[in-house]
Image 1 (cartoon, helix red, strand yellow):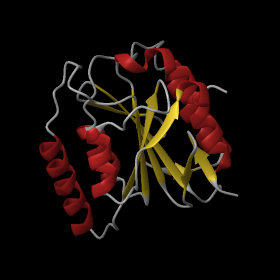
Image 2 (tube, one colour):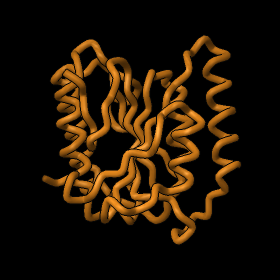
Image 3 (spheres, rainbow, N blue to C red):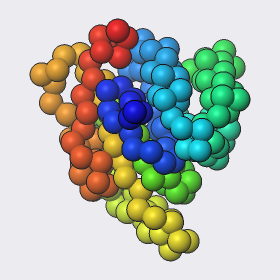
Length: 193
């Protein structure tokens, strides 16, 4: 049985979830955590996972830090960290700049990274240049592969108000360049059935 995250199929292996924790995600952060819990329960105990949050240009690595097997105790600790995230002052921040979070995830050398965001358009406090972002990810991938790492695929999932929304251009460019296929659009209703 395939593991799903927000309706997107995840291949077996090591997965790093890179989750947007910016202001646009405030209403949906609880639902994203619930979706992550479903996905982690669907992983095999031999698969490994890690979770990296980003808000602004900050990357926050959730417990267990580096990738760990998807065993019940690691899943529970990661979910506890995420549920307590707002309580200890982590809370969503302004803007969405995934570069540091993706660089961190690439350095973990997973087979798959899943990047989830509501989009990264220029209406936020961050104006991201697509080519600069892609070049930063190319450099991170080159550094990881120089250390013997394999090529990591980046799948992008975008939360949208309705299924007619066009994918965010930056998410599309990241997914295209890193073998993740098209951006998977998931509506808020689909995320919170």
